[in-house]
Length: 325
Ligand SMILES: C[S@@+](CC[C@H](N)C(=O)[O-])C[C@H]1O[C@@H](n2cnc3c(N)ncnc32)[C@H](O)[C@@H]1O
Image 1 (spheres, rainbow, N blue to C red):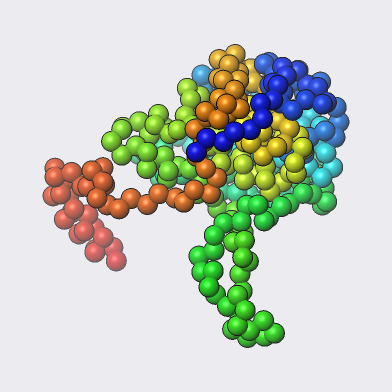
Image 2: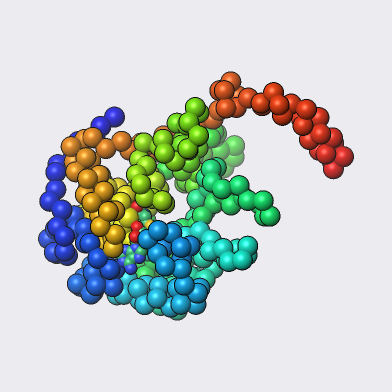
């Protein structure tokens, strides 16, 4: 359903009283314009050094050295009660997996940040590996700058599995034992990807048919960012994505009345981010609704059926399974 919000001016450089800032250029230059203790939430998916079209692949050491310098500046602009959500996957070198969050963790710790969660974002699509198990999750490291941080659980609660459960002893015996607003969503998030499957039953390219998909090779699902924004910031706070891509963070922040800033070096992505923000203000941007239930195939869809040519293999598979059980 289209969502109408009041249109906001998009500034192209930092201004303390702006609502939305989208800077076209290098993150280092943009950071230099932001005062200390400004931002409540830094949320980003940095370049992974995979040699994507927007990055030159360098050694892991060189990559981390550059990122350390940026992270130190992000720490400087972060408010005392603020958070950093750093979403990364793996760097793969000669077939060997280097989990980026493990490499990043000491950089944040050295600055004195506190890890509150290592969130697993699980999805069900992607490349099929042949010499290791296929990768189906990425992580979000959530750090706070101090012990006094914003955490609003209620806006991000999810429906409980058994809302009818009751205390069976003690002073609350017989009363409902859960929370009427739902349960804590935990640190394992199954966001969007299943829904992408729901959209593609007859279409081979999964990502291409997702309502939020643009030409960017690895954009955030807006819903993923929304959850962090709702839990870790309050209205009017600044949310900052230093690697803004096509503006998913800015849209999520604006949607929830936060002030949004982002920075992106590729002009093509900046233009798309601007178009998406404009479409959002006009109520024309397709966004998967936050908390929409996960799609479960019924088995009747054409793509759920085992192809006739494969039916012979079913016997072979059954044999393997029974011989190992
Ligand atoms: C993983 S993508 C982020 C995508 C984003 N989360 C979205 O939803 O569109 C990383 C982005 O960082 C940008 N980038 C890489 N190095 C940069 C730099 N030094 N300064 C600014 N942007 C940079 C890339 O062009 C790319 O769009």
